[in-house]
Length: 141
Image (tube, rainbow, N blue to C red; front, side, top):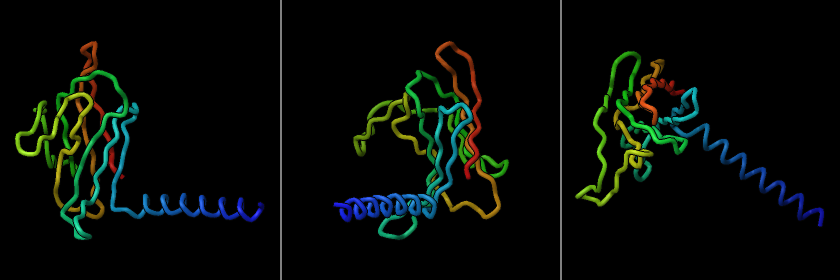
């Protein structure tokens, strides 16, 4: 019976280590807002093992009803993309349903790989249910 538990502990440990290794070696930059509402990611996208570019996306981590006014994705101080209009409804081409709360389609940018030594961040300007405006900056690392 002791051998079974030892083998089980070894297997579970190996699986956990594999997930940790995969998470740290994957081509990804991540960040969270200081207030814990937003999670952002800049990740390499691959099809069949070949890179098709890097995709920046954000997700709201809570269920609070908010209104997003603007999203910016920046490299150093240069704005790579700025969004102020957000579509809600069904895509006529592939049938994807988009909603504004929370973002059902969080992708905001598809482009080149990050440049070595440059900083990247996402800025989100949003309004809470009482009408107060907030400005969150997420540094991607």
